[in-house]
Image 1 (tube, rainbow, N blue to C red):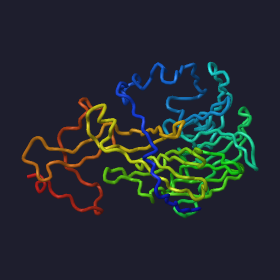
Image 2: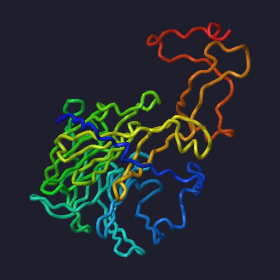
Image 3: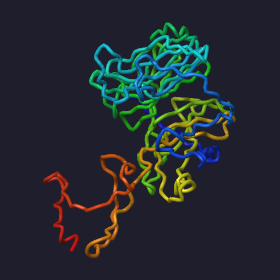
Image 4: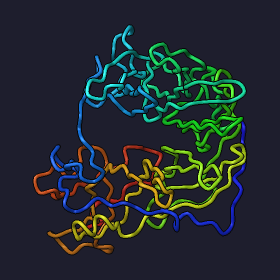
Length: 399
């Protein structure tokens, strides 16, 4: 394990440099049927729909990401049910190679297969690399597991000739979990990856799914021999918001961009919001600041008049062209939430008269006829005899 500590840059704040683009209230059904999903006429930028192409074995939900370089696009094959239930001779994941020289007639021209029981998620990127050790186009992609034979880490391919990709390194990353060497000697699972060419040196940052130090950075100046140079836990910067229940803080995605002469990494850190690091020296990143989720959730309040705490879930973000703002997405897993439980019938309720609730299992509240969870309440046990305090008798709680 290669551990480094983040330096703190005083006097620099991320909030002042971020702007959030909220969807307009004229677009209904953000969590409903297909219609209304921000599908417009294209007047904002004059975007025209010109074609579509189905990969030869793609199923619904099996394309997780897309990257493009020059005349070719690279699409991640995701295991749509994370079951790895394809036959052993069928790839569970990988990258489709598509010729887009004629945008009206794109063609699938190749497929880069991931290891068995391994799929590719949100970490597909192709860039031009020019270092003392390598000159050409490379493709990087993450590896996630869905079966006993999976291999994690990040893979790098030479796609200078996209129709003949050549493997440079596969399943590379951090081979330790909490300071203990992995057995077998496999890299940790990786959810996303991003590479950048810094001149004489090139680097790759990836999401480590298996430990708190989840920001892993490798030197890929020689992409045939990547070297892990640092791993970091951004929670040391107190980026969570515990007063709002936003405590699930981990790296989900990231980008790196040269801004005003410095290399700046923008990380989507789930409940921790969006974080900026200076990575001029990637082995010793400098923490610049992080965003905060506004309470109450401003979009929900504006569109519905409902006051709720923000959900968090900073999913992915990009700098705008002028670098003044970022455009960020929150992955909304629970657009419908439970509120406190109140008794409305029967004898007077003991203090407190309301009880906190949390959804456990099952479907979202939106599937219920009135979108409300209500009905009789049954007092139950923990199901863990000997491990918890005894459940008090019902009459001692409710007269």
